[in-house]
Every structure is written in C-alpha cells, then in structure tokens.
Image (tube, rainbow, N blue to C red):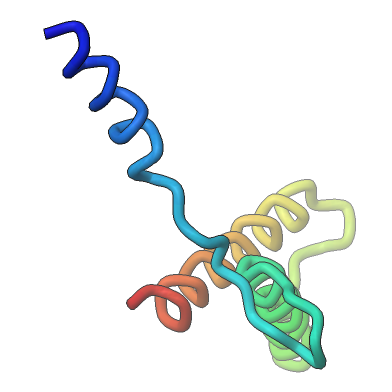
Length: 87
C-alpha cells in the first residue's frame, strides 16, 4: 500500500501542472492576464471619458472614485479573461 501511495502521490501533485497560458507576439510570449489588464485599463479610461463628457463625475475630493475605478478595472479584466481566454 505504501509503494502504491509513493507512486500515486507525485502524479496527483503534478496533475495540475500545464503549460502557462501565454500569447506569442513577435517571438516573445506574454501571459494572458497582461493583455486583460491593459484592456481593462483602456476600458476604464473610456468609461471615465464618457462620464466626464456627460458631466456625471463626482466632486474631485471624493474618496470613492479610486475605489470605483479599481473595482471597474478588476471587473473588466476578469470578464475579459473569461470571454477571450477560457475554452
């Protein structure tokens, strides 16, 4: 029984190992999350521009604005990763 456990334990520990999710760009490989973060920052900047054009931004002294933009960036990055990089 110990011999079987000694053989099966490394297999179960290594079963989660796979190749890293990456995209080749001009010969260099970048992780998927990097593209999602960049896209989310661009998306957040577009939302900020639309809110500013509509005159819907809160006063500059509000502390909720950085928290809201951080949350929006996280939501956009995670949803972009789910849409584009999950099979």
